[in-house]
Length: 213
Image (cartoon, rainbow, N blue to C red):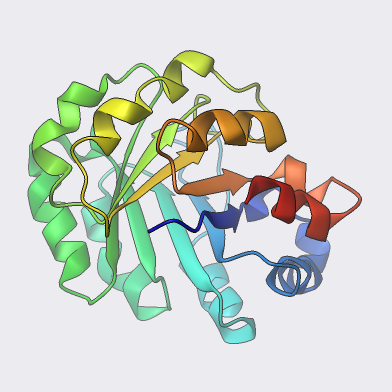
Protein backbone atom coordinates (compact mmCIF):
# COMPACT_ATOMS: atom_id res chain seq x y z
CA UNK A 1 0.00 0.00 0.00
CA UNK A 2 1.89 3.07 -1.23
CA UNK A 3 -0.72 5.69 -2.03
CA UNK A 4 -1.39 8.24 0.72
CA UNK A 5 -5.11 8.53 1.45
CA UNK A 6 -6.13 12.15 1.99
CA UNK A 7 -9.17 12.66 4.23
CA UNK A 8 -10.26 16.32 4.42
CA UNK A 9 -11.92 17.14 7.73
CA UNK A 10 -15.29 18.81 7.30
CA UNK A 11 -14.77 20.42 10.70
CA UNK A 12 -13.06 23.18 8.70
CA UNK A 13 -15.67 23.34 5.93
CA UNK A 14 -18.35 26.01 5.61
CA UNK A 15 -21.38 24.34 7.18
CA UNK A 16 -23.70 26.78 5.45
CA UNK A 17 -22.33 25.43 2.16
CA UNK A 18 -21.40 21.91 3.18
CA UNK A 19 -22.44 20.14 -0.01
CA UNK A 20 -20.46 22.67 -2.07
CA UNK A 21 -17.32 22.12 0.03
CA UNK A 22 -17.68 18.34 -0.06
CA UNK A 23 -17.95 18.42 -3.85
CA UNK A 24 -14.86 20.66 -4.01
CA UNK A 25 -12.68 18.13 -2.23
CA UNK A 26 -14.33 15.19 -3.99
CA UNK A 27 -13.58 16.70 -7.39
CA UNK A 28 -10.04 17.78 -6.53
CA UNK A 29 -8.33 14.58 -5.51
CA UNK A 30 -9.46 13.75 -1.97
CA UNK A 31 -9.85 10.04 -1.20
CA UNK A 32 -11.95 9.98 1.94
CA UNK A 33 -14.09 12.46 3.87
CA UNK A 34 -13.26 12.83 7.57
CA UNK A 35 -16.29 13.46 9.77
CA UNK A 36 -15.63 14.40 13.39
CA UNK A 37 -18.46 13.49 15.75
CA UNK A 38 -18.08 15.14 19.18
CA UNK A 39 -20.43 14.86 22.14
CA UNK A 40 -19.31 17.63 24.51
CA UNK A 41 -18.28 15.01 27.08
CA UNK A 42 -15.34 13.05 25.72
CA UNK A 43 -14.10 16.28 24.16
CA UNK A 44 -15.13 19.86 25.04
CA UNK A 45 -17.03 20.52 21.84
CA UNK A 46 -20.23 19.42 20.10
CA UNK A 47 -20.36 18.93 16.34
CA UNK A 48 -22.67 16.72 14.30
CA UNK A 49 -24.47 13.41 14.59
CA UNK A 50 -26.21 10.63 12.75
CA UNK A 51 -28.70 12.71 10.65
CA UNK A 52 -25.90 14.84 9.17
CA UNK A 53 -23.83 11.78 8.29
CA UNK A 54 -26.88 10.37 6.51
CA UNK A 55 -27.32 13.61 4.57
CA UNK A 56 -23.65 13.60 3.59
CA UNK A 57 -23.92 10.01 2.39
CA UNK A 58 -26.87 11.01 0.21
CA UNK A 59 -24.81 13.56 -1.74
CA UNK A 60 -21.41 11.90 -2.17
CA UNK A 61 -19.85 8.56 -3.10
CA UNK A 62 -16.71 9.30 -1.10
CA UNK A 63 -15.53 6.95 1.63
CA UNK A 64 -17.01 8.33 4.86
CA UNK A 65 -14.29 8.29 7.50
CA UNK A 66 -16.27 8.79 10.72
CA UNK A 67 -14.27 9.65 13.84
CA UNK A 68 -16.27 9.17 17.03
CA UNK A 69 -14.88 11.45 19.73
CA UNK A 70 -17.61 10.36 22.12
CA UNK A 71 -18.19 8.41 25.31
CA UNK A 72 -19.77 4.96 25.03
CA UNK A 73 -19.25 4.72 21.25
CA UNK A 74 -20.52 1.14 21.18
CA UNK A 75 -24.07 2.47 21.62
CA UNK A 76 -23.97 4.24 18.26
CA UNK A 77 -21.97 1.99 15.94
CA UNK A 78 -25.00 0.39 14.28
CA UNK A 79 -26.66 3.77 13.70
CA UNK A 80 -23.57 5.23 12.03
CA UNK A 81 -23.05 2.09 9.96
CA UNK A 82 -26.68 2.17 8.87
CA UNK A 83 -26.44 5.75 7.58
CA UNK A 84 -23.37 5.10 5.47
CA UNK A 85 -20.15 5.22 7.48
CA UNK A 86 -17.42 3.26 5.66
CA UNK A 87 -14.90 3.64 8.47
CA UNK A 88 -15.74 4.09 12.13
CA UNK A 89 -12.90 5.10 14.42
CA UNK A 90 -13.32 5.02 18.18
CA UNK A 91 -10.96 6.24 20.88
CA UNK A 92 -8.98 3.82 22.99
CA UNK A 93 -9.53 6.17 25.93
CA UNK A 94 -13.32 5.87 25.52
CA UNK A 95 -13.55 2.11 25.06
CA UNK A 96 -12.15 1.09 28.47
CA UNK A 97 -11.89 -2.69 28.71
CA UNK A 98 -14.07 -3.37 25.66
CA UNK A 99 -11.73 -2.21 22.89
CA UNK A 100 -11.43 -5.53 21.06
CA UNK A 101 -15.16 -6.19 21.40
CA UNK A 102 -16.01 -2.77 19.97
CA UNK A 103 -13.58 -3.08 17.07
CA UNK A 104 -15.06 -6.46 16.16
CA UNK A 105 -18.57 -5.02 16.42
CA UNK A 106 -17.65 -2.35 13.87
CA UNK A 107 -16.22 -5.00 11.55
CA UNK A 108 -19.42 -7.05 11.84
CA UNK A 109 -21.15 -4.40 9.71
CA UNK A 110 -18.69 -4.99 6.87
CA UNK A 111 -16.87 -1.68 7.36
CA UNK A 112 -13.41 -0.66 8.50
CA UNK A 113 -12.69 -0.41 12.23
CA UNK A 114 -10.36 2.32 13.45
CA UNK A 115 -8.77 2.97 16.84
CA UNK A 116 -7.51 6.40 17.86
CA UNK A 117 -5.19 7.58 20.62
CA UNK A 118 -4.90 11.03 22.18
CA UNK A 119 -1.54 12.83 22.43
CA UNK A 120 -0.87 11.69 26.01
CA UNK A 121 -1.55 8.01 25.30
CA UNK A 122 1.56 5.96 24.60
CA UNK A 123 1.43 3.65 21.59
CA UNK A 124 2.36 0.58 23.60
CA UNK A 125 -1.02 0.91 25.36
CA UNK A 126 -2.72 -0.33 22.19
CA UNK A 127 -0.20 -2.99 21.11
CA UNK A 128 -2.69 -5.85 21.49
CA UNK A 129 -5.34 -4.05 19.41
CA UNK A 130 -3.17 -3.07 16.44
CA UNK A 131 -3.65 -6.43 14.66
CA UNK A 132 -7.44 -6.13 15.06
CA UNK A 133 -7.92 -2.56 13.82
CA UNK A 134 -8.01 -1.78 10.11
CA UNK A 135 -6.81 1.73 10.91
CA UNK A 136 -4.89 3.35 13.75
CA UNK A 137 -5.41 7.11 14.12
CA UNK A 138 -2.71 9.04 15.97
CA UNK A 139 -3.95 12.41 17.15
CA UNK A 140 -1.24 15.05 16.85
CA UNK A 141 -3.34 17.69 18.64
CA UNK A 142 -5.70 17.43 21.58
CA UNK A 143 -9.03 16.36 20.02
CA UNK A 144 -11.95 18.75 20.09
CA UNK A 145 -11.11 21.75 17.94
CA UNK A 146 -9.61 22.43 14.52
CA UNK A 147 -6.72 24.77 13.76
CA UNK A 148 -4.33 23.58 16.47
CA UNK A 149 -0.55 23.31 16.13
CA UNK A 150 1.01 19.94 15.30
CA UNK A 151 2.63 18.19 18.28
CA UNK A 152 5.80 16.65 16.89
CA UNK A 153 6.25 14.16 19.73
CA UNK A 154 2.98 12.55 18.71
CA UNK A 155 4.30 12.00 15.20
CA UNK A 156 7.19 10.14 16.74
CA UNK A 157 4.77 7.38 17.81
CA UNK A 158 4.26 6.34 14.21
CA UNK A 159 7.23 4.00 13.60
CA UNK A 160 6.34 1.88 16.65
CA UNK A 161 2.79 1.38 15.39
CA UNK A 162 3.77 0.89 11.75
CA UNK A 163 6.15 -1.89 12.73
CA UNK A 164 3.20 -3.84 14.16
CA UNK A 165 0.86 -3.36 11.20
CA UNK A 166 0.54 -5.35 7.99
CA UNK A 167 0.42 -3.90 4.50
CA UNK A 168 -3.38 -3.80 4.37
CA UNK A 169 -3.77 -1.61 7.46
CA UNK A 170 -3.85 2.17 7.60
CA UNK A 171 -1.87 4.47 9.87
CA UNK A 172 -3.64 7.81 9.96
CA UNK A 173 -2.63 11.15 11.48
CA UNK A 174 -4.96 14.01 12.43
CA UNK A 175 -4.04 17.42 13.80
CA UNK A 176 -2.08 20.35 12.43
CA UNK A 177 -1.40 18.64 9.12
CA UNK A 178 0.07 20.67 6.27
CA UNK A 179 2.66 19.98 3.58
CA UNK A 180 5.58 19.93 6.03
CA UNK A 181 3.99 18.11 8.95
CA UNK A 182 2.34 15.70 6.53
CA UNK A 183 5.74 14.75 5.11
CA UNK A 184 7.07 14.34 8.64
CA UNK A 185 4.32 11.79 9.25
CA UNK A 186 4.50 9.92 5.96
CA UNK A 187 8.28 9.63 6.36
CA UNK A 188 7.53 7.80 9.61
CA UNK A 189 4.99 5.41 8.14
CA UNK A 190 1.65 7.22 7.94
CA UNK A 191 -0.40 6.38 4.85
CA UNK A 192 -3.49 8.49 5.58
CA UNK A 193 -3.57 12.19 6.45
CA UNK A 194 -6.49 14.15 7.85
CA UNK A 195 -6.34 17.88 7.13
CA UNK A 196 -8.90 20.58 7.71
CA UNK A 197 -7.73 24.18 7.62
CA UNK A 198 -4.84 23.38 5.29
CA UNK A 199 -7.27 22.13 2.64
CA UNK A 200 -10.47 24.11 3.09
CA UNK A 201 -8.79 27.46 3.83
CA UNK A 202 -5.94 27.11 1.35
CA UNK A 203 -7.32 29.12 -1.54
CA UNK A 204 -6.38 26.23 -3.83
CA UNK A 205 -7.93 22.97 -2.71
CA UNK A 206 -6.53 20.91 -5.59
CA UNK A 207 -2.94 22.00 -4.93
CA UNK A 208 -3.20 21.55 -1.16
CA UNK A 209 -4.48 17.97 -1.57
CA UNK A 210 -1.81 17.25 -4.17
CA UNK A 211 0.93 18.57 -1.87
CA UNK A 212 -0.05 16.07 0.82
CA UNK A 213 0.25 13.12 -1.54
